[in-house]
Image 1 (cartoon, one colour):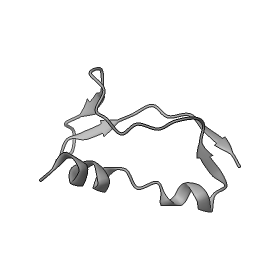
Image 2 (cartoon, helix red, strand yellow):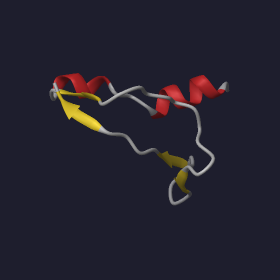
Image 3 (tube, rainbow, N blue to C red):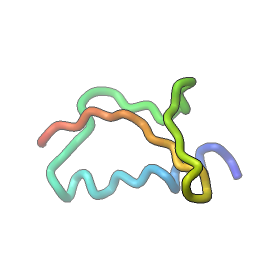
Image 4 (tube, helix red, strand yellow):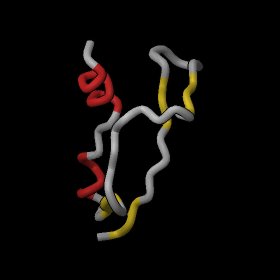
Length: 55
């Protein structure tokens, strides 16, 4: 599976608009070198920091 396909499943932000939130600034979905992850559940889960603001 391509990286874009794998990340596309993980990052579903369609609900942000429903609750009146938006990204604050530019957004990049590139995997950072210091990504935080968990192997507690399969598949591995990645956690990214993001700053949101009200619309």
